Length: 412
Image (cartoon, rainbow, N blue to C red):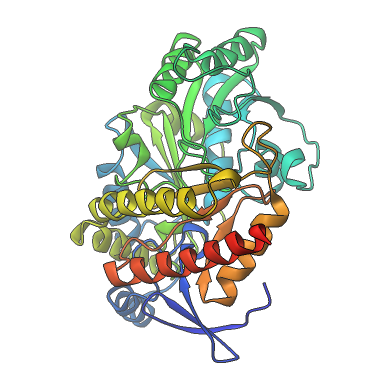
């Protein structure tokens, strides 16, 4: 994107040419509490004066406080934290812990998933679909189709399918005794805001329990209020064995990630040397993350996400139905995480990528930043959770004007 960012004002991003853009992307789900929050910045400045770094083999007060806070907002069975510098690192830690516990190298993930940019995490992701540089390594990777109800890989209807997509997971695990870990995004982010059908995640959790497979959630994008709950595990009432965090954990102030683990996983991984990165969980990063989480809790941003997200989703469905009905395939979302698919026609559901590009470029030119899926098939809206009602209306106004432009172009 040919925009040189120079600063922010509220949730408006400024560039070197003097333009302003209302952010409906949160930097890909990083600044959930809003851009450049003074409350967190003040903690960062104070921590720099006191202690910014400590070698990872020493405990610090800041690390203990962050650990206790993360454990308090995750399922009860998760009791210990693994240190990481980001989401990919946290997912790799979960893989190591699962192998340490089960002795199995196999990892099962979903198509259209994205779990990070490191070598192992790219292998966990749907590298082929997103043209990522897949480099084969020793671990054994397996994938089953994502529960994409709009583009069901089994060509079934959600009302009558009986969660057949979940049975694909059971078949894969039953047919591959070396699978020791199932890892999924509760709602797929970069793959296009793919929402699980009701009961899907509970069914997967039960399947993993029955086969002694570690059930882990990648909440790098869904955590810290994004979906309308502090975590997706809370909202979907799941008891995962592990959860990975990144992105919004540091609030855009610091790079940091975490793997929150069950006692069994945490104990198992300690039989090996600790290979946490040197800069994982510095006092500076921990202090910033703790302040950021407290800010999200104190301002009840999950509830705000739930409320404003319902308005955003409702208005988007109305606008697209009014101005681009024949080319709108699906408008879906949870909290302030919304995906929009444009199609060539309703019957084939072939993605209208050229139309999407025109729409997204038009939004940026009018001053609205949005995301798109890795393969440019889904438009993704993820505003900061402290979005004001005024800015929500501003963003919707820009979207409406661009839809009207596309509508008039189609008529010609």
